[in-house]
Length: 396
Image (cartoon, rainbow, N blue to C red; front, side):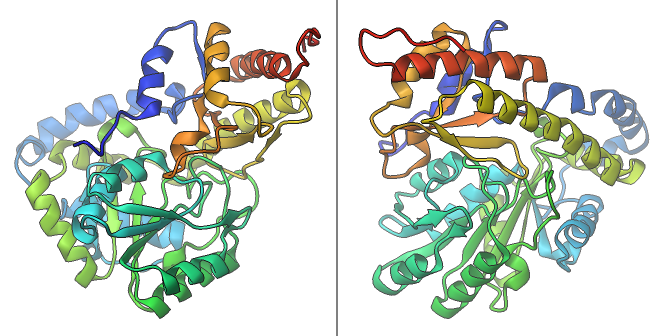
């Protein structure tokens, strides 16, 4: 427990519950795209027609109804052939990360990850007293030469953790060549890959790219997904798919954790997919988030000082900001909150800390007018921080 600490994002979100705060901090979906109205009659009908099964225990692997849906989604969204028996339903993909820690990690084992990487993965793996090694990462993903060097020279490397599609926090998307290279290196060194794909369906520019798992010839890539980003996070439904020799330990670990994922939410999700045009639903999400991303980028182009750089993600929910090296995002957050705008400082996304001049912005949760106003206020905070002492900064 001494290795665990409260999530920076969770602490910031406590502040952002105030209705007067423009929050770019959390990774929340837009409230208006959550299908509450559609699900209300479905839930009532489910309890009337199949209530016993919805309220009863279910297999640890998950109900067949939902595993068939996930199998079809893997075929449609990822071009990966998996039978329902190759799928484990979990309590959100975060539980998949926790189970990966239980399965693979002992004290002192090493996780290779991107730099920066997902905070939830750091928290999950740190609970098992793992060490982290950040692999050099650029706009196309992990740099294969650096990954190879670490695999060749480091002891006790147990997993490679990656988020190739619109990564949280950076918003970056890996090139196809990097995906293939990581799969090849994992096979060559015999190290499993945990591929986290929560944002793969949220593509706004270009076409979706094949996952690392599609290049897996050694059966070493474990693919995690979730319905939190394309359906509703409150359902707490995710999935893990892998070859049976790797999936079975996850099943055993889940039995010891919670026995099963909620039968009620599994059946509700399965009915939603059966009764609705899921592709149209995802297209609607992409339309909303695409517009919000564009609104944020336009505002940043207008209001941010030229000394500040940022990513232009082709999908997902986040973009990444780099300030001049002598600026501290944590200190600027205090000033930003005085302006009633919240963001997440970037330091927490690096297992080794540092990088105080970085921060993450979310564009999915706020409407376009508030995005523009919030970025205008942030631009003022950043401009004032950049102004020489004793010189008044212009107000954008």
